Amino acid sequence: MDVDRLAAELARLTDVAHRDEVARTQQRLRIEQLESRSVEELGLDPAVLVEEFGPHQDVPVVLPPGTEPQEGAPTAVPYVRAEQEKRLRAAERALSLLGRVNPLALEEFAALEERHKFLTDQLADLKKSRADLLEIVKEIDERVEQVFAEAYRDTAAAFDHVFPRLFPGGEGRLVLTDPDSMLTTGIEVEARPAGKKVKRLSLLSGGERSLTAVALLVAIFKARPSPFYVMDEVEAALDDANLGRLLDIFRELQEDSQLIVVTHQKRTMEIADALYGVTMRGDGVTTVISQRMRDEVPA
Image (cartoon, rainbow, N blue to C red; front, top):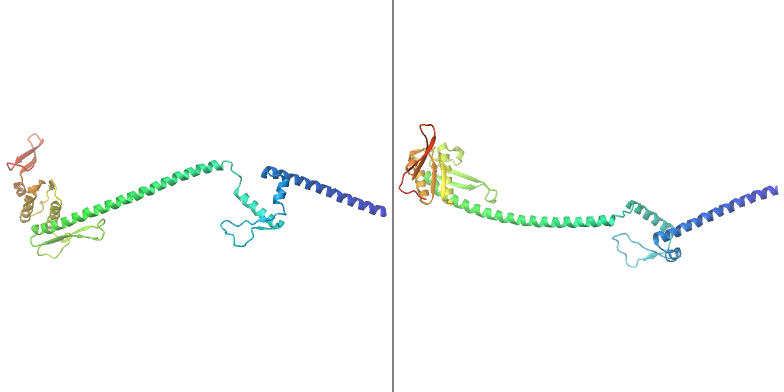
């Protein structure tokens, strides 16, 4: 029995010794691997690495980005293996999230940086161009508003003078729909012939509307004179009395401008300096004929 017991104990001790030998071999291989990594990855001799960063050295305190160190707080703490292993696992997870190292990252960054600079310059140019255009638009709006306001003022004053001549005893005026915004406002024509209370053009007769339109046209002519005017049968719907008043205004316009009037009215032809017409010859071909009514035709 003693022999069997001793043999069993010998076998156990042999197994323990074998396991210890295997463990020492594995530990030696692990140490060799770590020494190789120290040289290959860090470029440090293992002895130097242990001396400068071994467990006997304090571990610097690394604060999160954007965190200011508190006054009096330690900058290094003693090495605690469990805590450093926890930091190692967190760092390895963060490193794995970054993915594999791109060897072309620097070239790609340089290209993107150049592209970003180009786009930034283009954006700056666009902003400057937009500011310049807005300034030009502002100047144009101011000029348009000024010209329109002056033209409206002169036309309204001329309309107030011309309308009573075409409608004796009547009243007419031009009204802005939005006086506070000269760029978007509209213009309404108010006309009240003698003996009527209405001012809306839609309630006037055809002849009255036609004569009101002529009054507005003549007011524009007087507010902004031109070397010549072209009118097409503007007096077609007028009776003799209204036609006579209009012809008086035509004579005034003749003093400073040349009038080209398309008409079928004999009285209008009578005040003309020259007549031009189209007739058909016997062979069916149309021809233009002219007749000078005065000795001198204004230039």
